[in-house]
Amino acid sequence: MDFESIMMFIVAIGLAAAAGYFLFRIAKYGGLGAALFGAPIEATVGEVAGTKAGYVTTVLKVNRLGGGSAEKAVGLEIVTKSFGSYQMFPITLSAAETRKLIALLQTATNAR
Image 1 (cartoon, rainbow, N blue to C red):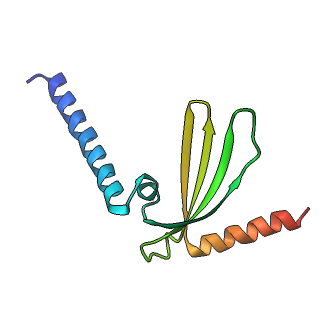
Image 2 (image 1 turned 180 degrees about the vertical axis):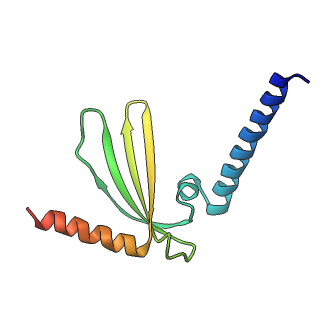
């Protein structure tokens, strides 16, 4: 085997390992979104639609996460959709970080 063949084999093993790990997380947590949060989604509490900009729509979804971890209590999904495009950005917050976010949002809305 030459050097190029060895490198291609190593890259293929790395890609297979990464795909296997991600598939394991999907099976462990019960779905793609839960795998991205690193905790099972108990319930979607609600969602808020952002201001539409042309053909782009943005929605903020709030999820209650399971697993009994205080470090992964709330999952926020920022979902952006447009023609031929879908992006989901997950944010995992602890209970303390969630309370801090609530306080910041209340401060921002009360300042007006």
